[in-house]
Length: 493
Image (cartoon, rainbow, N blue to C red; front, side, top):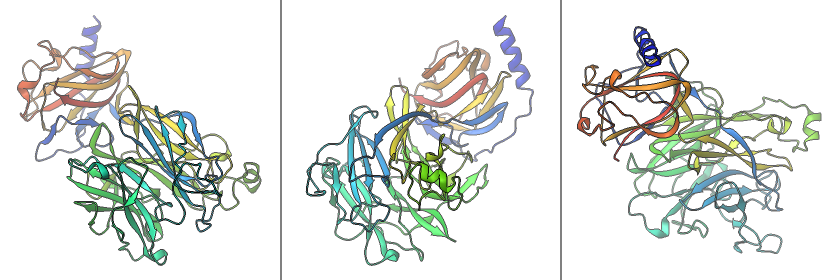
């Protein structure tokens, strides 16, 4: 009886008009890549289904910047995971001015991403002692905005497994450029060459923030995203390189929302990186800055002991994505992580995400955020999400429908990352190039999917095998009720 009601509701759903989101003239080539729903790349039409962003869950402070060489102005953090160890890189700065000679690059480690320790590296002396976790001291370039990454380029020498860009001031602010660094172990860094690798080619001051780079598996090149300015607004520019040594000139990134230009807002840091479960999709957990937007009174600022120069602005973070090229997709204009409760979260240059989203459990991933900037309580905080759970396609109690664009795939199974209620469910139909059900893969052949799993194979009456359709141009029709769909992937068993 329940199945009959469910199919009746499906029949009602398909009578609804299905607004088109756009169709590609050529079929997409998915291969075995995972697709998450932070953009409309795969989607042709939705009816009764919405794209929903998910707010990361606050898991609390994981690292206090409370050593004498760290202090209230720590920031520009990066978190790397190499498969066995988490590595935290961050700027140490006890005082607000960068020319005090106290700015340094610091390092911490963790086995689980939750509990961190400072190894005594013995590399740099602070107040006469080398018993600290300082990697690079104030007399060297890179300390202000060091941004490391694990180089995944095939054939990269072990001695250059870790790479980074770091700010170098040549003669004046107008001449700040980016030096290249390499390391085998992520700790003992050296310059890749004496001169910078990226020069400031803009007429206005640039690079005074975290500038990030990585090897793009999908594009077959190194790409970098750096700070530039336009009309007095902090913007993001992209650079490209075949070898990390020779880089193209800057090309300013634009923002799109629903196929139209998105608002231009100040992005203090961009934190663009390949998503570790779908590296062809680059995620940007950018720090959005509102200069002069003051939330605190002077009395409230004094009560939390924030530096007097750092409470007259506000900031949060937003989520953007790109698949290469010079456009960020701002599918969701709302905040990714909002400032938390209490005045300590509403100060200038706080709530800046660290570079990278990393796995922190079999079903979980985390993003780290620098908070309480300019205060004695400055710290790094962890926020968690389910794997692929940045956003989902959601249907309420009434059934909704998703129709994909035309595509080809490889593999022999279709796997979903999903969650339903006890009353909800998902069914999948595979259609031919013209949108007609392929025999054996029609909606009525699909076994209803119920539950909450990171990976479940879709199955039809004849089983889950789809290898016979691999390489053929197909579409998907997905009918959902009271369910979230986070990702899908054709894969090989």
